[in-house]
Image (cartoon, rainbow, N blue to C red; front, top):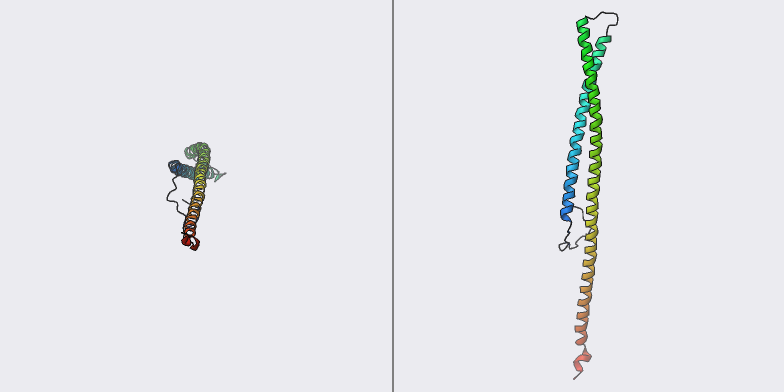
Length: 167
C-alpha cells in the first residue's frame, strides 16, 4: 500500500478500523478482474470460432461458384449446399453468442471499475485518517517539547544566582 506520510514518521500507533473493509474491497477487485479475464477469453474463443465458421462458409461458397459453366454432380452440390447452410446457421449462432458475451464483457468491465473505485475510496479514507493521525502526533510531540522546555526553564530559573543568595 502507498503511504503519503513523511519519511521517518512513526505510524506504529495508527490503527485503521476499516482495514478489514479495505482488504474485502481488494478481494472484490481481484474477483472482478478475474471474471473480466474469463469473459475476455470466452469472447476471444467465440471470435476465433466465428472466424473458422466464416472461412468454412466462404470455402463452400467458392466451391459452388468456382466453375459457373461446369456442372456439379447433384450429390456433391447437395452436400456442399448442406455444408454452407450449416455453416451459415452456425455463423448466426456464433454472432448471437458473441453479442451476448460482449454484453457480459462490458458488464464485467463496469463491475471491475466500480470495485476499483470502491477500493480507491477506502484507500483515500485511510490516507486521510493517517494524515490526521500524523498531524495529531506532531501536535502532541510539539506540546511535549513545549512542556519539556517550560520544565527546563523553570528548573534553570530556580537555580539562578538571585535564588541562591536569598536566605
